[in-house]
Image 1 (cartoon, rainbow, N blue to C red):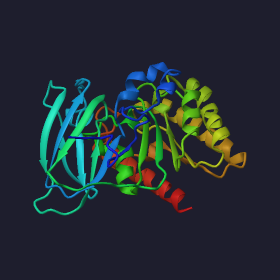
Image 2 (image 1 turned 90 degrees about the vertical axis):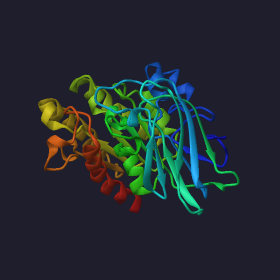
Image 3 (image 1 turned 90 degrees about the horizontal axis):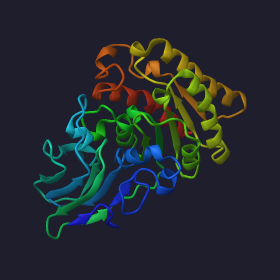
Image 4 (image 1 turned 30 degrees about the vertical axis):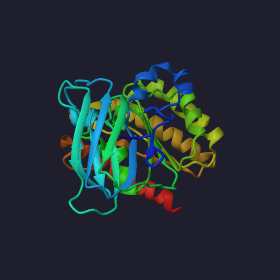
Length: 323
């Protein structure tokens, strides 16, 4: 059996060696409310080349959470991609935390790029896979710097139908870039410790979206710009994309007021001479038609909503990377 931590496997999105976790323990010790959510594996991905005809996956998830609005395939399943094309989702049986699944990758032996996207809302205690005897296993490096996303449950991936359909993972596939997902359901509160951690990383772009986790507009106003300024002290030239929440129809005045707060941070940065800031109004993220089909509850996007978000954010990221 082969571990996801094997040197021939490229594991992205995990902050520690030999452990599936999105923040280092030293950061969690300073922001203890993120301990459980940091163990959720959203954005973590295993990548490698192989010519195997088959792959067998054995995983042990910490538990199987029961969500009324999100399927097991997303919060506890794994998406397998072959050469950037979706092949299959594998997940534990209902009520089970372990999984042993064999998948046929191809019928004729040839070298393929394999990506395995990890669960969005579950902790993975162990992940092993097995290839055909004698099959090739090779690292699949991506030298480009990753894009980092920080935000709410929407950023974490709630409520996609499967892991690769979160908007951050969609953008990873569309852009051919690794990502780091720091979406923390209900718990992204603009903590300065997180800004300082992000400032310590070598990343290409920072997408900044925790509007939905601010208890009210006053809290967002008190934390949004200080978070940005703390990051700017460490990364004066890092491109930063500021976003406000989608789903205006449900949130009305709160959405309008919170968007104004995010816009103020953006305009203040521009007026200070900062040329590496970008703003996306959350009202535009779901497009102009069929907006009522974009969420499961007026807040959390379904696959349609996430696709529209990815399509809205992608041109901004493309422009940054071209510059």
